[in-house]
Image (tube, rainbow, N blue to C red; front, side):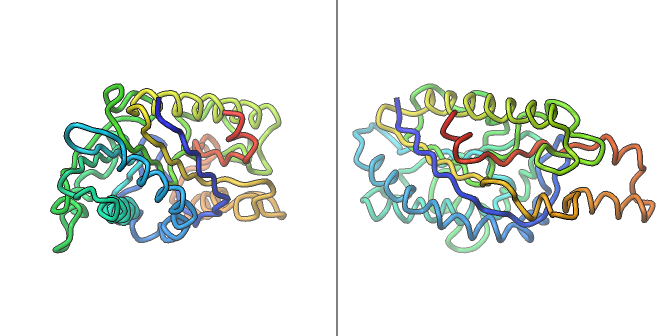
Length: 269
């Protein structure tokens, strides 16, 4: 079974939203995901160590990597170049690497494909790429098939919202969330992370490594729970209702399946 290296960060990301049944649309994600990209540097020491370990493993054929939760490539492309550079530093040629990108079926795959082929040094020209349109809460690769498994700024998305968060909240961290809702979301976040780690462990070869870098932190998280109440998400919806762009009953039912785990919650999984 592979080593699961959980790299936890307390990144307080930029404000953005996501459709309930879809990932963020490609070009918009690439424009507004700079905070996520900047936070990747926190995980690079762990990633460098993992790359060195997997590069030294005995293998027949390609060294296989999968990026879980790749979105449209705004950040996944730079991470892929970093991984390929580190592998080459360890003596593994990029052409001997098989690099998979995973996200939901509703992901903006055309935008990712465009990004993979953009520029003279495009990822798709450096190595062999494949796409996996599936939830990372499912089996995504064959058993014992991956040498390196990574997920950067993706695991705060739950498999689903377990219930409404409250009368003036769209996620469990907000002031408007009820105590019962917060507990239900905490339970779902724990179950989802346990399921994710078990699935990824099954997919790793013996000695393989997983590096998982996620949004999180200890409360209070000022950008999502400002002292005046509400959140950037609730504020945005209230402005949309006031402008006549969103029906009030729709806003009242809205949820975003987004949960930021504490360090202790990650360790508990």
